[in-house]
Image (tube, rainbow, N blue to C red; front, side, top):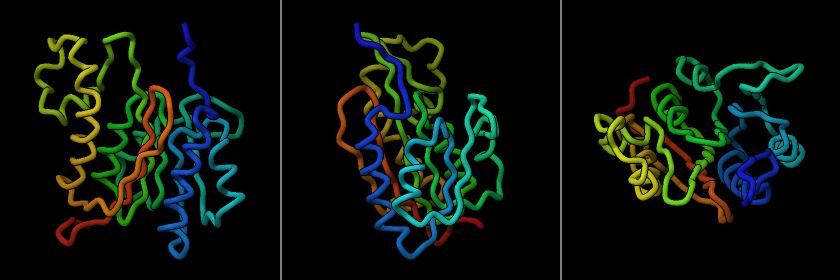
Length: 198
C-alpha cells in the first residue's frame, strides 16, 4: 500500500510552475507581499524568492520550529487588517476555512494558491464542514454517509471557489496545475467588485 505521507516536496514542479505563472503575470509590477500559511521548511518560497522580487514574506505553521511563529494561519486570516496580496494555503487537507477568511477580510487585488488534499480510502473520503456548507449540505453534515463525500469532492471545489462572488470578488483568472496524485493545486487571481465594502 502506498504511503499517504505528504511533504513540502510533493509535486514540487507543479506547485512551482503554478506560482511562477501568477507571479510573472500579476506581480511583475505590483509588489508581492506573501503570507505563507503552511510554511513547512520553506522549500517553495525559498526557491521563488531566488527567482522573483518578493517585497515581503511572512510564513507561519502549526508545527513548531525554531525561529518560526507557531500559529493557526486561519486565525490570522480571520482578523481584519492584514495587507498581504499573495496568500499561499498549501495545506494537506481542506483549505476552505482559509479561503472563506480570505474572502471576508482580504483587500484586493489578491493572488491565492490553494492545495486541496483529497484524503480518500477506496470509495470513502471526508469533506470539510466548509465544503459541505458551500454545497448547501451543512444541516446534513452529521448524517450524510461518508460514501457520498467522495462523489461530491470535485463538485465541492467549484462551489467553494464560486463563493468568491458572495463576498464581492471577481475571479480574474483561475488555473489548476497538472499533477498526479490525490491533491489538487489551484491558483486564483481575485479583484474586488465595485460594490465590495472597504
